[in-house]
Image 1 (cartoon, rainbow, N blue to C red):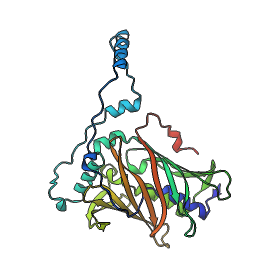
Image 2: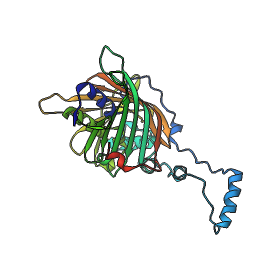
Image 3: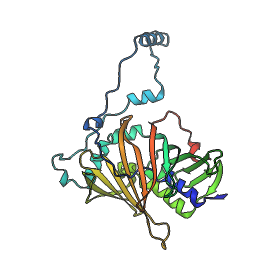
Image 4: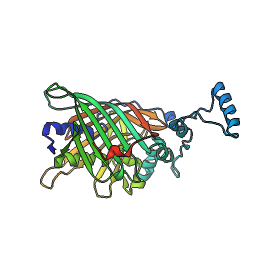
Length: 327
């Protein structure tokens, strides 16, 4: 088993600690993008005739030309507005009310539950290595298998980065199967340092999706003071996890999107806690779920990584669960 050196640890932080934290000019997504588009019901004339003829041969049953993902998309439930919310007095909302409005802004609970059974995120990652050197750029691919609670989600993150020696690209894989975590480099198991392991597991817990599943996870949401960031007033929410750790979210008072989140990681009782801050931007609807396509991460005020997603997919027809248990 190889031991992860310090220079490789930066790569772990890059892939492990996920969604971004940069204070950028905010471009709110119009409220219309929150609403679910009506699925297309128009069939191609030739296909319709062919299906009708085929249906006569099959005892009156029509054959569907849709693949599983297209068929699932047609069954997406309608978005449900939060109940008992007085939209004209947001200053009086408590933490759970704000959280419910945020969930609705991201697609609503029924839609998220139906669409986000699993996910695949593919993009470009830029990692800070040294103050005097430009960030390292590579590829990132992440798979998520959603379980009954967020802390049981299965996650696999693959990163391909250029070799420091200029040879073949290095391939790093970090996994969590719902109970234990593991890592590999170039298809060889590696041992994570305590700091690397703690930051990786914390990144999975302190995620923006955790707020969207606060009820299922049994976490507590409390409203706290927000901040004015780049001219945007925010509402503060503090999520208390079952183990007592906390995540603070900064919610746009205009769009109710999650703009930033903050959390701390205590590696050991003797060390000072590591302070992480993430920011999210470039929000786009993907299969009726709002997704931040860019994110940045800062640790103790210093830039660590930037991820730009190029392709995001939910509810994959096929996802091999062995991905989360093997190299």
